[in-house]
Structure formats: C-alpha cells, structure tokens
Amino acid sequence: MKIKDIVKKVKQIEIRTRKKTEATLMGQYHSAFKGQGMTFSEVRPYQFGDEIRRIDWNKTARFREPFVKVMEEERELTMMLLVDISASMDYGTKTQLKREYVAEIAASLGFSAAGNNDKVGLILFADKVYKVIPPQKGRKHILSIISNILTADYVPSVSNIDKAMEYMMGIFKRKSLVFLLSDFENPYDSRILRAASKKHQVLGMRIYDEKDNEIPDVGYALLQDVETGTKVWANTSSARWRYTFAEAQKQKVRFLEDDFANSSAGFMNINTGTDYSKLLYNYFQRK
Image (cartoon, rainbow, N blue to C red):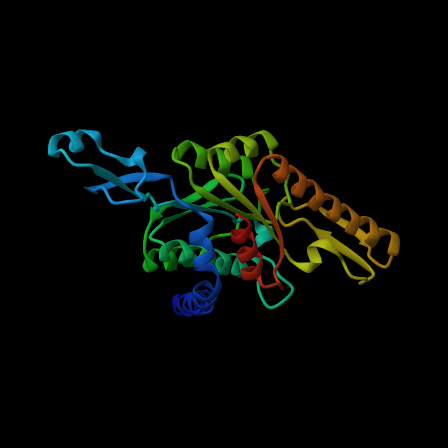
C-alpha cells in the first residue's frame, strides 16, 4: 500500500468512526469506565448538607470553623489495544479485510478514550509481540495507531495470545482497559486470561469473516491454513462435511464465551459485516 493510499484510508476511517463515536459511544464510554477512584481537590468552608466524614479536622481546628475536603473523580485511564497480526487477520470476503475492520474498531475505541482525556496504547502480536506503541493522548496518536494496524506485516504464523497478555501484564501495573482483537484461531491458556482479568478490565473481541464459520459448496477444494501452511483437500459438496465444519466453529465460540465469562472478562463475537458500534454501545451500557 502506497503512502498516499495509507493516508487516504486513515482519513476515511477517522471520518467514519468519529461520527459514530461522537454520536453514540463517547458518553457511554465515560459512564462505563469511572476511573481509578477519588482524589483530593481542595478545601472549602462547610455548607449545609455536606457529609460530616468530609470535614478537614486540622483546618477546622486552626480556623475555628468547619471546613470540608472536596474530592473529585480521578478520571484518567489507560486503554491498551492488543491486536492480532497473524496472517488469518489479513483476510476478508466482503467489503473489508479483518485488519481494516479492526482498524475501525480501534479508531472508535481510541477516539472515545481521547475524548475523555485517556491514554491509548497498542500491542501488535502474532507468534510473539512485534510492536508496542506506548500509551499517549490525542488525535494524532490515535491516527498513528490506525496507520500501524493497517500497514503491519501480517505474519504467516500461529497467534500466541498468551505472550501478548503476559507482556501487557508485565509492563502495565495499574488497572487498565484491555481490548483483545483477534480471530482466536489458536488456543490460549485460560489461566493467563484469568490472571489478566483480575488485574485489568478485559474485553475479548473475536473478529470473523462469514467464511470463517461456514464454507460454501464449491466442490473439491484445496484448503490451506495461512498460519501453519497446512493444506488439505476437502469435498465441500458434502453436506455432512460442511455441517461438521460449521458445528466445530460454533463449539469454539461457545467455549470462548464461557471461558471469558468464567474469567470475569467480556467477550464479543463480531462479523465484519455488522455494525460494531451498536455492540460496543450495549457493552458500555451494561458496564
């Protein structure tokens, strides 16, 4: 992809996602994620109705009239986007590749965070962590994140979610918002997910193309796993074969839903042809 094409694509994504973000997501995001607690702001004279437990007894004794501590919400949060760049994410049969769809979701999340003065960081991973962009604030930073997702070299290797989660937990000690975007084609260690969910607020987002779940009848076809290179001939005309394949995918999704729920983490199963903003809005509203 040429530089001018990248710039154009990033600008298109910004325009589309900022409309969605400002119209629906930003307010719900602010309500859903309350920050790290309350922090001291100032001291002022007591007013009728103030809570007694807020009285600053030292200042009250010094000036012989009651003063109260004013507390405010410590709003600033850190959002980390963990994005799978294994080869299966560079694929799509509709209007978008998975990588383009992920870039739009990341943009919506990023602009929601930026609108609330939160920091956003990015980890690109496949079989290992390939790139880390430290959390920062602002529009230009979000545009850089979008560009990095679009232009990453998607790796012909199995994705290793465990390494990405372990890296993230090793670097970020404070509670963060963690959005894990992958097609979850490869297994992961549930114990690591549970450990991450105890420390951070985690949402797994399975991004899939409709052909990931159901393969059409195209006769005998040579199918290749783009991550492992494994090839296999399949008779896609067989209704039994297609049913078995589709059921295996449904079972995988059921496992993911149950495992994330048991780990106190959120989970979404998102088709590249759907409006992700409605799903995110509902998720923020539930939080």
